[in-house]
Length: 247
Image 1 (cartoon, one colour):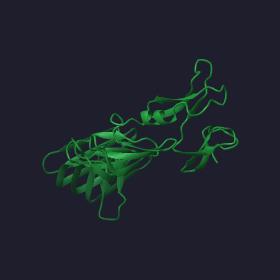
Image 2: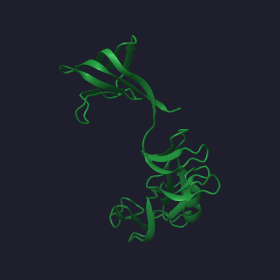
Image 3: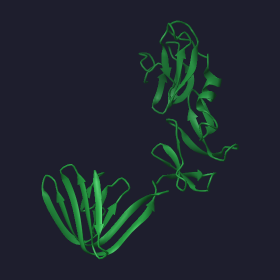
């Protein structure tokens, strides 16, 4: 169920108490967001005349003709008292993002927001790997959009990691491809939550590990490890490499 935005309006007295006390009077609109952020807007510009961001508590009281809103955050208090209310509604709201497709489960719009893809109707959410982009292609198995993610090379995978795991794609391509610079053992592709990395096969004796950067392996660094072309430039697999790291 979508979150609710509370909207109240009327002829109000607005009092802020914190480092100092300020009072406003006017016909204003009060917005109470799902995270309790309380904003008081008048007719002038986009900036609220008073606000309290994510307060500890918000209490709304009303008798049918007026209302009182009290928001508290520590020693700060925002209080809005309306003698006469002109509006009081709770409206469904969602986060806003870049449209990237349609949810195969309910036909709702899929948007990319804050590093995730979310359905605006059922609110199902899929996390995106770092550096991934959503493509116009659709997964034939489940109907979700496909993503493009670079981990040594560009992989085109389903948005749902349970349908098309990034770890398996990287493992199939790069497991045992490179040697450990410390002991000569094979570098194995390993997985941890939110991370695909390389670790020496001799992990009982050798603790060498490398995060696989978001980029494409293009050639070999002077140190012998692969070099990657990334969004920030060329770099060695070993981010601390004095020869190719971070270049």
